[in-house]
Amino acid sequence: MRCQFHPGALWEYEEAARYYAGCQPGLEFRFMASVETAVRQIIDAPERWRIVEQDVRRCLTKVFPYAILYTIERDSVLILAVMHCHRQPGYWRRRVQGGDAEPSAPPSGGPAARLANSGLSEGPASVS
Image 1 (cartoon, rainbow, N blue to C red):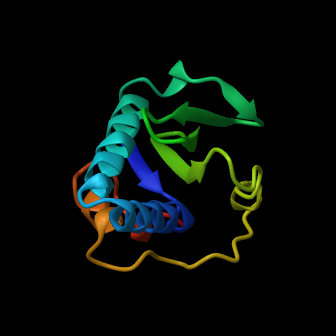
Image 2 (image 1 turned 30 degrees about the horizontal axis):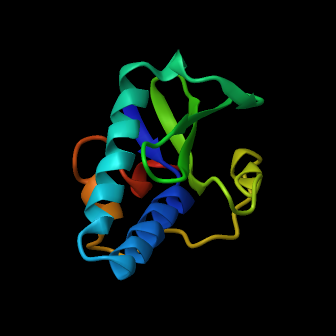
Image 3 (image 1 turned 60 degrees about the horizontal axis):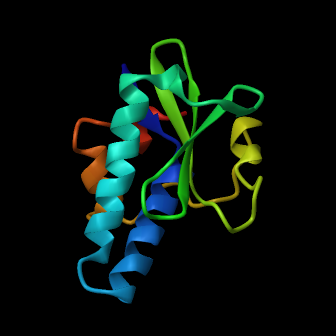
């Protein structure tokens, strides 16, 4: 199954990795590995995690307080958010409804670009 990221989800991933990079050298790599593991698990068994609202499912990352929110589409998984579990619950709902006031793409060259180029995701260009 293919995986696509909403542009806002890639931006969140990038911002969180930058935050962890500033906390401790190398911590951003542990965070990235945690997110990538969760995404691989979602791709392998997308129906494994429970529905939290409408058709949106949630997979928690290990160690870090983040959740991957996603929907199962006809031929892919759409990652809607890389959400910090202790901040602004529900902000991602506007992504399901089609509205999005967030940046259209993450800064290039960072961890989000790495994930988008890893084969796990088709990146923001494939997300409408």
